[in-house]
View (tube, rainbow, N blue to C red):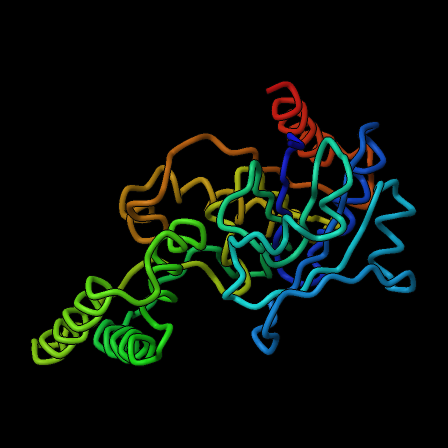
Length: 291
């Protein structure tokens, strides 16, 4: 069995994810595989390619990746064995770096690369939540799912994950009874008074996922980005220190574990912020390798 660190690098397009990965590859002397992952629900099954002319694949290889691939997957394959059984993952390495959409729910280290905030904007914003519309949409989606022949199994996969759901029989009296009871419960919930709208803290558009990262890098490619980076890091700190913000953004699944958050010019390998972020990632790789 191959024991290695799995590092997910997320963030909006153009933020500097590939640049960070290039710096990591150049600063780490072990074997590292890199996968560019794209969620594509038009696919019926996952698909791996290793195009030699793809510009990102070329950047990975030129920076020192021992292997690189492009992996496209539908939502149904999230947290399945599809990614782990790719040709790329059959090669030995000390680490696997996944850039883009994550094909699994958990990784050893989650890194988020963010652009600095624009002038006058904030990471944390107040929004009104239409809870009645959300409830209707959730009920409609669940009802449509349960009416499909494989609906119960798909629902269990969403709730429990692929591996746990595979232990539940696809067709049995117990499964059918549970499906019938769930449909009846949906009808009962529909007849209840709808919930009132609420105002809550939310993340600005383009920053979804930053709340779960253990490493956050605000890419300051120009001096004008400095103020926006300071505001972003201040709001990021509020997520774990302000009780109301913590509850709205992270809720029951959140932790107050310290994170590494830096402002860095990723175009400069000697930048203090870049060096700090890379050191944090390398420590995670070494820690897993020593297990």
